[in-house]
Length: 142
Image (cartoon, helix red, strand yellow):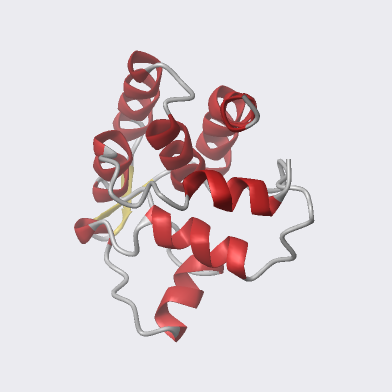
């Protein structure tokens, strides 16, 4: 599956509700810096996890637009909140499975970054990818 195929599939999904992804991000599960967060700041977008900003739709579209569309969309994509959003808005993973995982992630939070919860992002990104990535591919390639 190519980056262009991913973009084409999700291009019309900006307004699809994503309550589980929003809940997770608003609970503090958002990159602090690097990647899409730095890109959003450079572009003057609000970066505030409590406001679910920037959106994961913007995250995916800006990623796709910054890459060669003919390249594969691979498992090198590890951002948990992005993969969760893709699974949720595409319907690729059953809602109850996403809800269970989101609940486990939120329950695992520590508070070592001041008021913002801290998560074991490497662990949870792997868990999200394991549950969702292949299912997303299957959904897009139907």
